[in-house]
Image (cartoon, rainbow, N blue to C red):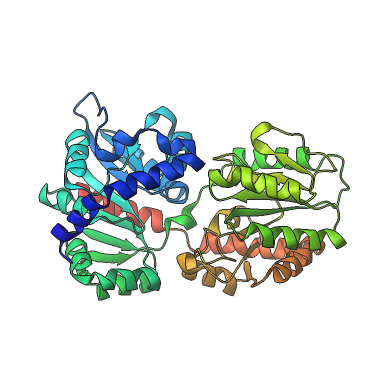
Length: 427
């Protein structure tokens, strides 16, 4: 497929894209706002300060990029950092991470006019794309303007590689226009080279996700929440968090939790759905099933009678991890590829995931081999592993210690990726 044909298909598909936005806005009203930004229409910076563009997709990538963004802010005080996202939740996360210190807009759709308007307004001297966020027209426009491009923290699953292979002429043309790739693993690097990217412009740096910095303030806030939420319960009461769950997964978590409560009746479940549009349906599912539910968004009190705290807010997941004893990371009991297990690991939490972890296969394997993560395949398996860890405090602490050691052993990608960014900026 040629880029011209790809662009034509994109233009013809615009009505469907708009309909999809309307559908998503029906579920999550934030999708109805700021449409003009997606087409490159926005008020750009009022001065001519040089800029570095960092593109993330949503919440996970925004959090992963945060250490690099902060390092860039320190190393390049004469540059404006522009961070873009594709989703309202990602946008909200960027605002919470940086406040007014960051210029933020939605990334433009991958159409020549939209991309051109965007680049004209921010005038980047370097474009950094996180993980697998690549768009043919965007990469081509940067290449034409001699803007260096870095695909950093890059990962490419076998499934994604097969998808790129099906449009090999388009993907090869796009990849070869990138200036450099900082791959997470040797397997990721191999897949990129098999698609045609030159080995000479690639380096395996590891993943930024191991460089998660957890402040003492966050730990203290988490412990304060824990004391508040367990008030009135016996001293042995524990908190089990199920994070970033998807449709079809909540039911399995609830089933597992109810089984755990047969032997550990004072356990509190924190359930955090992945997407905001699911907050209300999950609440109705929980309360309709006879469970006593408190909503975090409305500051409902968590009493000894509360079964489930619904984490229906944005930007608080790490605090909730810090308040918990063990974590299940979602998107893994259903075929979504799993979400980031290193976030709970950074807080020393034993972690459980389902079998569908292709988005984090290397990380999961590393954690599993170190005894920091357990894989389960069913709700019954989740119940058994959860009950075991909650009942055996010593085993729980041992697994949590292994998680901390995994994080410590694998740090270092941040410094390498910063050096690559600075080298490209100086070219």
